[in-house]
Length: 171
Image (spheres, one colour):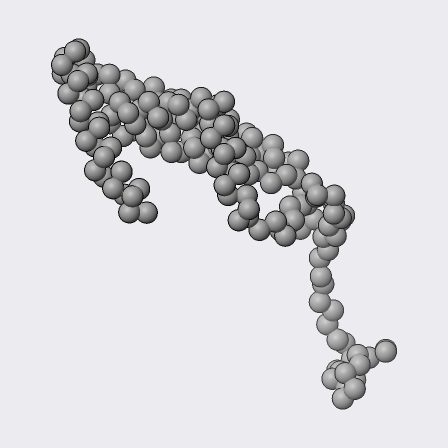
């Protein structure tokens, strides 16, 4: 964690300042500032459209009763891309735009998933039934899920309730 903080608060700003100076000496200060503003605007529009695509993928996975792991990881990368594109700088913009290219994002997401997958608890089953519905469904692993709703029945015969043997009336 310390290494990440060191990179984020020391190395990245030094690299960005160096790039600002280099680009500013070639194209001028006004053009450099305009380029930074343009990349932020373009990045914001791209993040919005890519984010909507990720939301559609999440909804599609949920409707099919699948765990939306890939869509969630890609959504995380779109969020990171948005932060990088709003951060002034050429190196952060380059990385942010790279994360908005779907094949690049999918490649990185696959590698991240291979790292995360061994630590994921897989005993949780994903059901396509919604709260308030009941019935049998089959999850992606093929196991049958029985979703029921319990109803408490009130005892109308107060004299027989709580017998010492633990039986209910009519037993």
